[in-house]
Image (tube, rainbow over all chains, first blue to last red; front, side):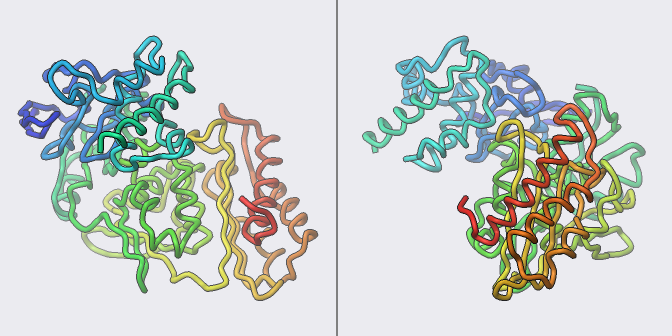
Length: 159
Length: 284
């Protein structure tokens, strides 16, 4: 039995038919065609499927799609500030060499965004706590933490 | 994922009706445990009945009659300033539960109803002598959390029963608490965890509550350890005795996360350290 739901995805309202057992990541990557969000472990350990729902970082692999109804969802596709230009956090990840194979990157960046949106000048410990739920199998954690620090500095200059 | 139906009732009555009507249905809160066990084919429900859309089940009242709604997410417990000030041990345990992403979805009621021996929120609630309010269409009852857990993944809940609130006693002025957890990495499930609460009058301990996780079929109160501390002057010798009795009283097993021997030893050490920290003999 499928049900049509609507929610705000990256600033625009979307309508999509959803079945009870589907998870948010299933409809993002499937009918909505937003394949930037990756599925790693599928059980909430690795964080590569992280998206932001109503301002909070969430694992989209453990989020029933029907619960997205009426909510505001941001995925990695929603980050670019103007057309064809990456966001400050994305650029910082590139500049600091924080991307190796890239599979964890969308999730890392969404966790970083949720952190910087609520806490614009985080300490290193706060950054490490915020990224605890994101695994990088290339193990480039130092560069990733540097990238978040750099993004915080640049965003501060922009305010 | 295996197919199932998903319902979002907007009242308890509607939730109970669905539960009675659909065999093999499960109530679900944040779902961070249930969805993983479905994914791993450990359970095969025909339908999930989400309690998230029922008004009034989430929320924190930290005033004279402290109450935490069962559907309150762990992240909100962590960030509630007054609750954290009055019950720092709840914040310590909430901070140790999972990752940011899990804490933004997982609920305190779900953590208890999943009834894992390692449930992080069970330990502070055990030492705080919390009560749970349980509701069926016919009755409302309040049970002490020490009577709630019956075994791994087993509680005293009847099939229709829903945990609606966690009820706390107002904190005592001279109450000293500490939560400690040992995991392989920070966001891991506990290899072992402990919570201690002491009510002190000078050097004498008037009331002691000690609980340990991942060391028995349920989160466990350590009554023998408590009795050594209660009505005693607390010295390094009493603390050493508490450490030794902890090793005797727990019943750990060997599993994927740790061995029986290591758990026995580390839990004793955690009790010692948590007592020292609660008494402010040592710094965090």
